[in-house]
Amino acid sequence: MGGLYTTPMTAVKTGWSFEAVWFLYSLLGIVLFPWITAFLTCPDLVQVLSAVSYGELVLTAAFGFGWGIGCQLFGIGISMCGNSLGFALILGLAATLGNVVPLVVLSTDKVATATGAWDFTGLGLAIIALIATAYAGILKERDLEANRLLDAGCAHADSTANKFMTGVTICILSGILSACLNFANTFGSSIADAAVSHGADETMKLNAIYCISIAAGGIPNLAYTSWKVMSNGDRPWKHGVSAFAKNLSLTAVMGVLWFGSNVAFGAASSMLGDLGATIGFPIYIIGMVVVANVSGIVQGEWKGAGAKAKVCMVVGLALLVLAIGACWLAGSASKDSMTVLAADMLV
Image 1: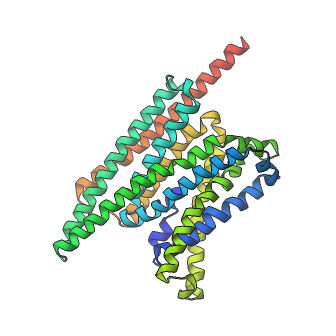
Image 2 (image 1 turned 120 degrees about the vertical axis):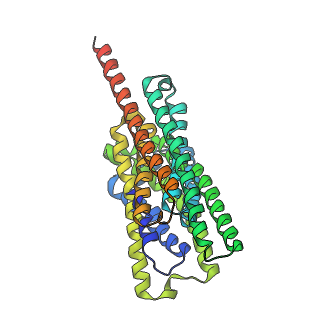
Image 3 (image 1 turned 90 degrees about the vertical axis):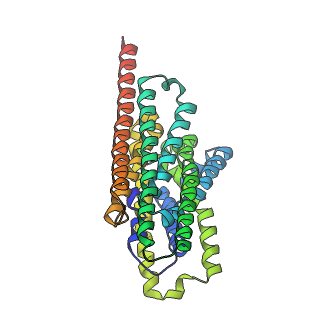
């Protein structure tokens, strides 16, 4: 779901600017859906949030705000680099940082165990895969640029190359900031605990965090896109009722896919126990990268790319799959160690 959420925006040509589409998506998927879901799945939500210290709520919101900046840069980077390269760069960095920090800070005792070894192996594979996919994207852009040179001058080519490298830089910044969402989940755990104590199901507890972190991330998204829409005169009603209805449906699908993937991740991570954030998060992110790349290939983003670029992308995807396997082995090792510990306690 998470790997497909930008597909409607890139596949359906609506005539709207990127900012106009992203504004509606942010309003629905980043602000409204998290609060609606939290109220539906977390009983006494107001009391839950009141039971948490003000400092933790602020910290969770701050991480969410940082993620929101990364999210806005994500949309810009995707529009400049395409689904395949954009997802690989951004989410590869997010998976790496979002995994290492919680493991080192909150699960220090597991770093030197089999769990930590497999976890870092998975991260190493993900980093190599990130490099391979980024290189594939650069090769693809060179190949496409060489084709464009048949019909365009050097000035145009330089401009396109500069735009591409700017997009890569934006994607890297987005990847660094996007890890903040997992930091919010990890360091805002008392919010989730309060939700469970007030009757929320264990698999739905992260929804109480999302309504703070993700909604706070909507602030920079809505601020930037609304400013761009108003300054460009690209107001939604400008295109007519039917166009507005079409884009509202389009962005609603984007919101359901993206936030729905977070709800599913929250349920799955609760089943992984204490290592849900450190093992589940990279599996979730890497899965998004794989699906987004397949989506990009299906949409023809790699049409015209040379054989070397395609081989690098396939190698990168294969390494990402291996990284998922390594993270699974980390979880399996953790489960085995907990079983041994339980047996020792019984003896």
